[in-house]
Amino acid sequence: MTKRAKHEFYPVAMSIAGSDSGGGAGIAADLRTFNAMGIFGTFAITAVTSQNPAAVHRVDPIAPEAVASQIDAVMEKIAVKWCKTGMLLSAGTIEKVADAVKKYNLKLVCDPVMVSTSGAKLLDDDAVAVMKDKLLPLTAWITPNIPEAELLTGKKITSVAEMMDAAADLSDAYRSAILLKGGHLPGERATDVIAREGKCYTLSVPALEIPPMSSHGTGCTLSAALTGMLALDFPWKQAVCDSKSFVYSSLAQCVEIGANLFAMYPPSEDVAPPVKLVEVEQQ
Image (cartoon, rainbow, N blue to C red; front, top):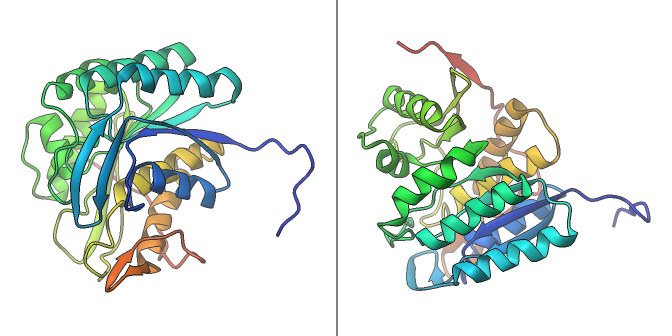
């Protein structure tokens, strides 16, 4: 074990998200990722879910006032600058989180979790408008997948070109950097799109052949990795590329957690091919 200085300051980040009893996504994935990156993880739980990689059996919301109280308790003593949100579930919780972001001047990465990989709803219908109006305008980064971006923009996305248009629209609407994840598109490469300050970029890696359900938690892991890298004060371009590499390596080195059941896990080494941002001229 590496010996640290007696009074070393350890960088901190916060996750505001739901629990996952199966350990693959949500708070569990976020704290696991923070730890792998050398970040001290704090959290506020928004909902307790009964789930495994294959299904969500039950969702029990935490009262919005209790979510706010968790955030207040952390911020009272701990030096958090960067936080991320995942599953927020209700309009009331979104409002409390938005209030806290403003109150504490937090830098926010928002993963707009709306539907689980298994198809379970993770955001109330009336909460979508509140997220658009009150939370997304406060973000530094928004990290939707394609179905989430379709819901936020009202447009169907079936290609990388349409991803670029959607990312640009979202960036303009919320004055935020957008990392639009392209894992839902078929093809030989997994391509993500970045829109930031009027410019558009792509970054891609070869698509991996992985065991079924081992991709559970990829969105949480990517947004947590990005939050951690930014909390460590890395430049945003390196933060994005290294986060993509972390997810790729976590998938490539997935671990068996049940009979023929595999889960992504922080890698023992970086096995990702070089990940580079490519600036793209939009038509």
